[in-house]
Length: 173
Image (cartoon, rainbow, N blue to C red):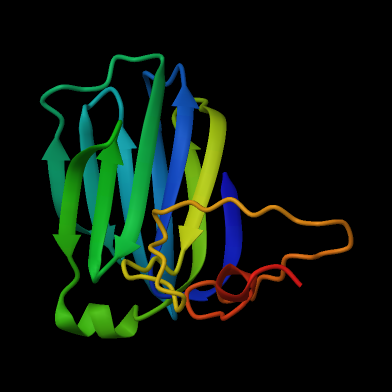
């Protein structure tokens, strides 16, 4: 299992690329202040379950379970909803109710684990504080840009990318 404390974040997405996973389960747990959200993909049972504080909220049966040797698994808490996807196919998008949404305005932990079997993870990515609007310089986050640095120049980035005004707007220093 992987367990990491997070600086409190409002939205996040974790993406795992797993290989040769056909039995057992992969679980994702997140929360704060005693509240816990858990999503579990059970490969053999072909289902994804969502629980809050160990109480089942919903489950989704997979009509077409992934048969590929490599599967991309995504778990997100974003825009007041819990999302779960396999190979970019959304399996679950469950809104959080008012009180729970207020209590989980930000989360400070993320745990990923395997149950009843081994999982080989080829890649793990964690995206935090997701934003869907243009940066202060007006450039969309989906529009990559290339910078050429002269000898002695540096490219300065702020530590809060969505709101930092830095070399992305003013160029190298």
